Amino acid sequence: MQSIEIKAEGFFELLKLKDTSMWEIFAQMIDGNEKEIIFLNNEDKILFSYRLPADQEQLEQDRKEFSKEFADKMAN
Image (tube, rainbow, N blue to C red; front, side, top):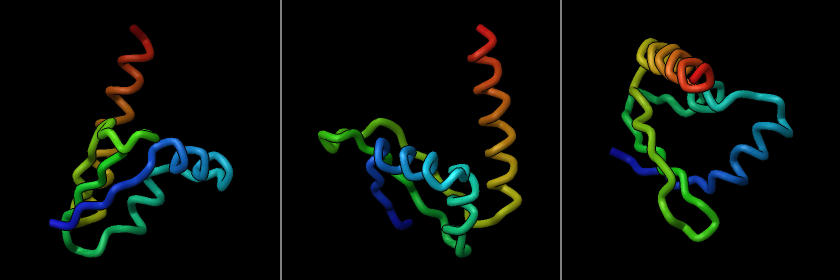
């Protein structure tokens, strides 16, 4: 499995500037192989990671699950 390290702050700033979602970027990265996306802070410490699935269907399921969990956390 390929590991990809991303500086979280810059990544999310770029998403804001481009007015796009991380899910659109993740969809473009799918090539049939799973990847581990590791988000780092400015000191190169791991904030969180996400295992990018090998297909669009699983990505869509992940997106729905994330959206539900996020909405639940925001409600509490």
